[in-house]
Image (cartoon, rainbow over all chains, first blue to last red; front, side):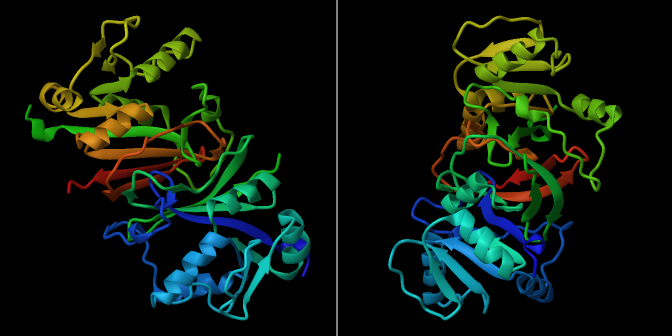
Length: 189
Length: 189
């Protein structure tokens, strides 16, 4: 596969006030009771096809620990049998063969290791990893899912960075659950 | 007119990373060059009808000063002949008869003074005023327009507040300019 075929997407789900988690990392507010009549339904088939289209996940250590906690609480493993690359210098439990740990140059890892091997590369968070991908210019897309709730405080999806990044709106979808998904291409300056 | 007919909307335009202005207050990034083919057009008639539907504006002193600066720079006055209520304890220039200043209890002002007089009440910013309206529970709706740009740092549209606020997605619109407008009803607990 050629590197040009690959697409690196930063994906986040956030409250309308821009938080991906409460200050203690909890994401209980991701379950909302909203009903938006005009929205699309997320059928099990749609979700399965969508998840099948993702070829690998990249995440920071806190996001990985949240995923492990979800699994320990009986909520399952969100990433199926896809490769999951955890960016960390810490020693963390490796609970399945699909998980690999990586430390070091993120741009080289994404461009030289992941892009030649995977087509649809999904940056699953958290804020520090997403911001670093923006800073380094290694991402092609940003996908933000906004939930119909304000949580008042917490962890932001992007840390600060220095320069404007122009985007191109590629798609907007509203779902019956009241979630709005916006997908943007990152314009390279 | 009965108070029940009135609707208080918090309206903000923000970058995708959740800033309503740069740290110095500038909003030059509101002009983006994006083209979203699937989007609606904002015809002059549409904009005129929309602006005509707003009955009064409420804003903080910094937002007012930004509006004055725009006008001084030849960009016109954004609020037509509608009443503009500026929340401030400072002495500020009053450049037209439609402008009134208010200091003191915001909830009483909105509920007892504005709601009986105006139907569509528009909270035009900034972050402190919008947050205070949320905290006090005086707003009925939040309308957020997201621009296709990341600016990395600046002034947030909401300050922190203590409790979750559940929302109901009422409408989503994407425009040819790449702007996405999300309108939510604020659910009263």
